[in-house]
Length: 111
Image 1 (tube, helix red, strand yellow):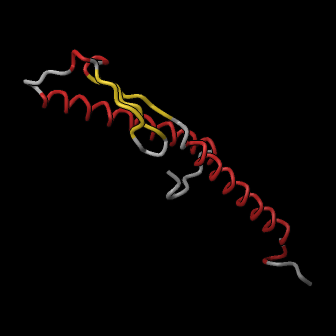
Image 2 (spheres, helix red, strand yellow; image 1 turned 60 degrees about the vertical axis):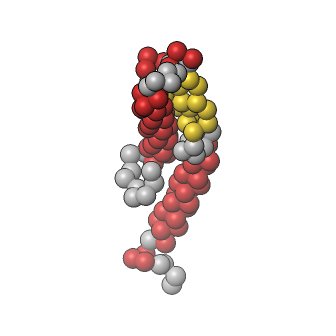
């Protein structure tokens, strides 16, 4: 009599299939998340940075009025702030997409 654990082989089989489907959805969402982007700005928009879901900086735009040879440190701070904002924004988007897939389950290492 091959009834499995506690006589519920059908339930175990269904759970395994469900877990496999969830794993496939997570993988697909991770791949799609690589195409997400977020923009971060600083200095009232004089510095703009775009980051991707791969956690890479895709572009940096600096308005001419932000460039002051006598205050390079200010420009560096603006670029840093915009980059961090863009990276945080894309991480938030990726996390939101993963939470949709996980359906509220707390899966360690998912994000």
